[in-house]
Length: 573
Image (tube, rainbow, N blue to C red; front, top):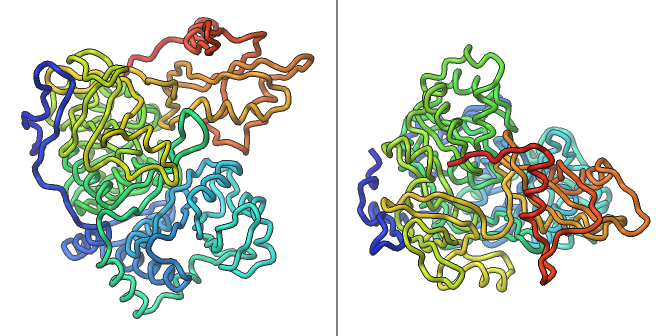
């Protein structure tokens, strides 16, 4: 049983939407490498990771030793505490090595979305000042090394580790995965060869001196205005969130967690990888990217006890060819998160996937990420219709536009305070101050709390949409589309979609005398912004519906598109 499930502090007091999480067990002050060391010592003979596509299996000591070798090698290349190294890769063993190697020596790992294209990559690397980048050669249609060569043609003429690129002025070192050689880049295998016993000892010495309150990770989260923001997280943030997430979903030593969600995201890095590290459970990666059949086969072959995913992943698995041929009875729990969870899908996961302990989690990157999670012993109606109750050591309130806490059951903006709140947005003091006020992270999400403290997310204060678990911020897409020479005005918003939850729609006003097609607008986006941000629906209009003060009425546009396309709102938890 979840040890905090019956704690009364999670119930609102005095009829107001304000809850406080349990205070036991106490927060951990250990760093990520300290947790890895402890788990490797305690569960030395158990599997830490299984990378099925690469055919690799590591015990906990093997993961620790591999990460320490990479940490020692990075020291030899000149990296040290506080430096930033980007990781641009799908789910591979090298990603996990980089996660724990950088943590060992206090290097800040910068997660680069595998779907990023040229403009997004350039912005992310420069914003955080990445001195290094570890990159896969390619993934699906994304040719990573080619994009890097486009941004930094100087790679063709430089020695590895001595890059001086006009468009990426702080990037010095590119480390590529794979056996092929690329001018100006190190191969990861040769970098690992730089490690020696003295280097490993030095890496471990540095690790022992780190503070749990040091910044260790930057994850980009787009804003409703301007460019993506780099949420800066500490060991303390993500270690404790991983512990409580694992405890709430009843993940234990000897369990095995199937991880089809991407590592670059908090779901994969914190709620999956790190949750296993702090418990001794085994990480099972079905492949580099999500494939429903590969996921089911991994559960079948590895006898996984837990499975993570966004709702679209679970839908694809339930509807996969040959579903009945897989023995999935080893499953009992996991997490469905990242997007609104359709109630009927949740029920099918309970029965067809045997996940009677499946939980729903809610949070955001800026809160490390989980603030609410349902418990494995919560009533079914609460697990399918809410995102659970407040997590330990966190305080949450729902406020109105004036900042006053609203009564139970009344919607308002969800605000979170506690250990999980980020240090801030990297080099963005003004945007940090706007988001975090008096320690409260203002999420921008509209929520309600019931009398038992269960939370329901009912909308967004602004107009962010979630497509298949990926946050899409209309302003970011709008600003990109404004670069098109034919576009005079554009508004981007979400419309319901049965598969992805929401799809991206753009209303476009062209400049006088111009003509364009939907395909032309989508082609303009491809290879420049992530695929999930590219509008599925494009409508050309003569003018946009506006308020008397000149603000675009997206709710009017959305209602008209729903009617024109014959769409239906998706009932969600």
